[in-house]
Image (cartoon, rainbow, N blue to C red; front, side):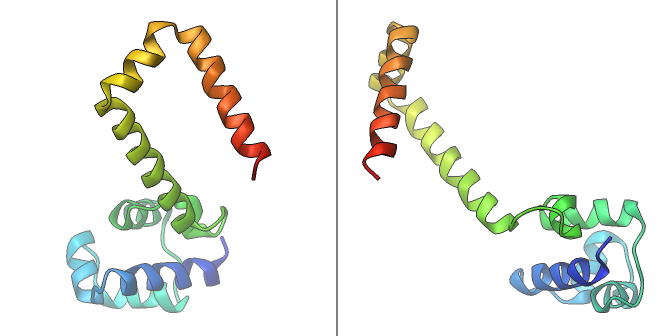
Length: 120
């Protein structure tokens, strides 16, 4: 585990959420002192604590450990995809179009996507 990346990321996440060490500690049943040690790299948490931190901050364990690309970009993309899916589900016209003749319409959508990518 890259302790520097881990320490930096948990400190950054806490700052982004505007939380004190005490507030995080209360939410995770950990002492503020131990959280301070994790944030400064003076101590390494157990895997169970890393899992709790990931869940608390709603990020992946890979992100905390510095083993993936920037989580914010992934979260932003996920939110855009989720919004798009909600829009499609709410639109009877799009839903009916897709399910009227799925095979043909999926091909139309794929061709449309290919055209958009080509026109970039």
